[in-house]
Amino acid sequence: MDKVSVIMSTYNTPKSYLRSAIDSILSQTYKNLELIVVCDGSKEEYNYLKSEYKDDRIKLILNEENKGLPYSLNLGIEKSTGKYIARMDSDDISLTNRISEELEFLRRSDLDLCGTSALLIGNTRGKKKLLFNSPEEIEVQLLFRATLIHPTIIGKRCLFERYKYDNDFTCSQDFELWSRMSGNCRIGNCDKCLLEYRVHKKQASFEKSQIQRELSRRIIEKNSSKITGKYDEKICKCLWFLSGREKITKKNYKEFSRMIDYTLEKNHEFCKYDDKLIKKIFYNRFFEQIIKNRIYIGNLTCFGKVLHSYNVSDLFHELINLV
Image (cartoon, rainbow, N blue to C red; front, side, top):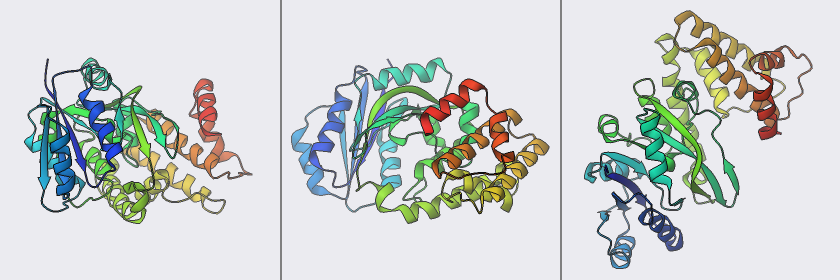
């Protein structure tokens, strides 16, 4: 049984959340694991965990000052010894079968990295479902958004030794990392919900939304070169629209549609991604934005393109999830 190293970083996490997160890893059905907990600048937190837990599978690391999540994750990976690396956030809860099920899926599907769906807990409840799971679909999705739930991932150690988290990305470090990995390894998603993902207002996604927006733009600007081999302003604008960072309105939806058409034409010209697949994903996202923002389209030309890229069951599935 190969060892799995679970990497967690914590900085002033409420004790009840932190205990639930740690206990959920220690109670996994998969037994050959270690939990690397990096206390990122809080000696009080480090001392608390040292006194509370005597389990040999836990390795505690203390940063003397707050270094940030990318630094702490890289440090945890460096100090780990497992053949596989899994992520865990200090305020989430892994289901007891998470590691065993996810590792089995990774091997069966011949993947280098995978994530899972998640159940939302806290301020928001429900299922965080992943609509695109295959490596080919995810590679296209990663052009404009992180399509893996960061604290659910597990991957081969060699992958994380080759690709490290970028310390400059205090937010969106997962999107940045997956974008660099994309095209050079097989990334997939397991549709099973194997993690309870806590939503609360102290998350980075709430507190640092503007920084996250700026860093996401940097990632997308770089990704825009993947289709033609060089930066393209129109492709970049298309991907930015698809990311959802730019709200689609009655005034700009036609421009959005033109940017999609332009990008699809360039993809066909340079033969980067499967034409049918990228069309389906792009117009699916366009459809999501239309529904989300309740845009009335008098001329149904754009909408017809969306319908044409779907079969009936796919379209029905999207309507159920979006309306």
